[in-house]
Length: 239
Image 1 (cartoon, rainbow, N blue to C red):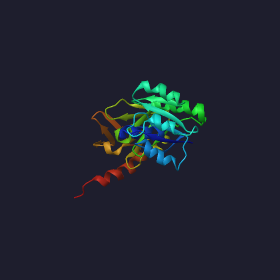
Image 2 (cartoon, rainbow, N blue to C red):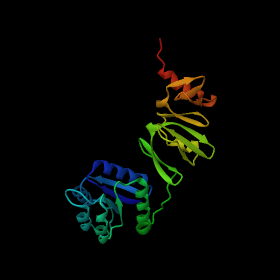
Image 3 (spheres, rainbow, N blue to C red):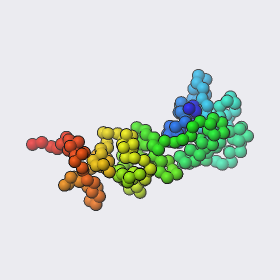
Image 4 (cartoon, rainbow, N blue to C red):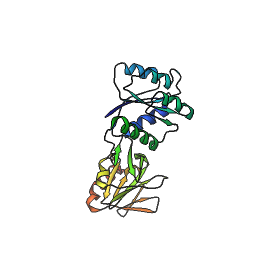
């Protein structure tokens, strides 16, 4: 594993950067800091291999921070201003990323730095889970999907199709059973060999079918019917 820290004085950008690092299997997030001073204090007692740092910070700039680092630590600069890139490369920066940073750009940079300096295993799993969301491979992209946005999932033999609120469906080459392992069972239930539903999205059930948007009918099979009925019984108001 490549031990990393992230530094950015913008809280939203820092959270996003931390999520990106946690989504890459060969990166290990050791800390996330809103200032270079906090990062320096951490580095006094801890060793890391790679730092993702914003250049424009109020206390110490990313450039000045990089000058204080040992040569063993690699740094990827993150900036909203492309003119800073030249100065960064003069400091032998491993790479630089231009804001706003997409996960695709981040992953390309991480792979490039890894290949050049660390040569860790870069094979990505088909799926990576967090508490409230997962990253999933779809074609040549890595896509973040929030659990709360999923309505239902359909198996299509060699792949699954994930249907979302107000978004186009996302397809991924994997088995339904594998995906099911990563879904929280308090929120999702398999009701048919070919369907998993988000229990929080159910509003209508009729004739052993779950109805979404008055036009999509999800069958409830006998194999999964008892478990689903048990869930439904918990919600009934008894006289």
